[in-house]
Structures are given as structure tokens and as C-alpha cells.
Amino acid sequence: MCSETRKRSGKISSRKIPPRNEPPLPPNWLHVEMLERFRVLKFAPLEEEMNVLEIGCGPHALATVPLAYLVGETGRVVAVDKARWRFFEEITAAAGVRHRIIPLKLDARELPFPFKTFDLAVLVHRIRSLKTRKP
Image (tube, rainbow, N blue to C red; front, side, top):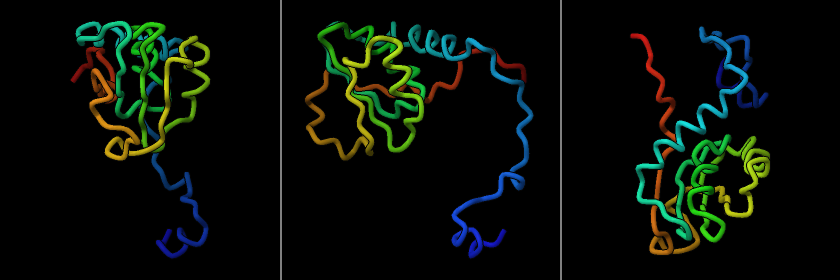
């Protein structure tokens, strides 16, 4: 598809994208991934009542939910991501921690408050999985 046609239609045909050779995700994949992030965050200097900035929270709140639990009822997590919010509200509400999270759709360099507002800044979402993979 030429770039001019793509500009006019605003779409890229999914038929042109080669299929990925990956097995389907197991039904509990979200829980497993979130538990992995929780284990990683146990090594961070997190305490209750902290204000934490999470950069790149992603659409599934994989690290956001564990962060919200770890900061406790009086702590807050400011979750920042430029564009990926698809399931975020649904997951944080189901986990019962939505009221501890302030989601912001922007670049972290454009925060509406100074960085010294936070006790800690983290970027945990980039950890894809802690599973052992065969080479």
C-alpha cells in the first residue's frame, strides 16, 4: 500500500501484517504478570503513604496495581503513559485500588507538578516477563 493511499484511508490492511508465531496466552496471564511485577517491587524502597510516579504504566496496569497496594490507603500512584490506556480503568477498579491512582495521559517530562512531589519514581512496565525462555 503506497503512503498516499494510507494517508487517504487512514488504515493499514491487517492482511499485510504477517501473523506472529506465538502460542495463545493462558487464561491467568494477567495475574501471573502482575504477580511478577509485585515480586520485583518488593525490592524497591516503597513504604505506605508514599507518592509514587510510575512512568509508562501501560494498558493493563501490571505494575500500577501492585504499587497501589504497596503504598497503602493513604499513598498515591501517579500513573503516566502517552497513549496506552485500553483496559487500565477496568483493571484498577476490579482490583479495588482505583482511588489510589491518578492516571495521566502525557509524556512524563510534561507533568503538571514538580518531580520533588514524589517520594519515588519507577519504570517497571518494561519488564516483559521474568519467565525463563529457551534460546
